[in-house]
Image (cartoon, rainbow, N blue to C red; front, top):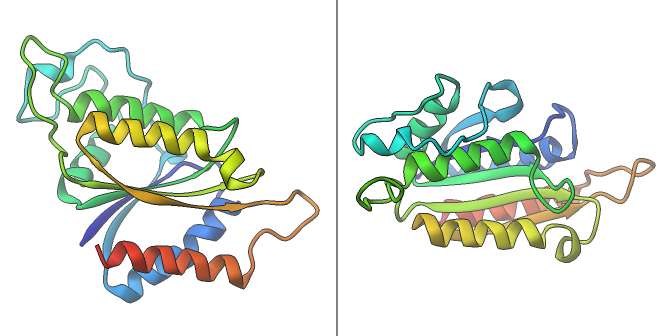
Length: 191
């Protein structure tokens, strides 16, 4: 199995990175290969819905010459993607949303003169997230949005694991959270 991990946090030492660390260690232990992209380190413009990408169903084509192409290529090589993201205002941060918006058009050939295929049909999506509210209150909007995204894009939704931060005066990461992150990675490794 091979994964593409998209990290949507702006903070290199934040909660999402702390949760991602034991998750990735378990992937390594399980022998799962992955490519990792820290989205805040990349230059990915927001989609303009110009439909340049719809002109060629066999090759990457976009009006923007930016850093989306390596993500696109990684996703084509992968069996699944993991969205590792904090939840800000019930959704992922803007740079991750830019990536997700652009991928709808670049991967789904639905918007040209003819309706074509979803180039990533059958691949899985998983979410590893952090938020300040109980997950059922803080992360559910993003999860529901990604379920709809998967249905539209012919992806298989594989599930979400979310951990809550209780505030600035508390320690976020502990062994229980690390163990749950490892268990989620092990479940993904099993397919």
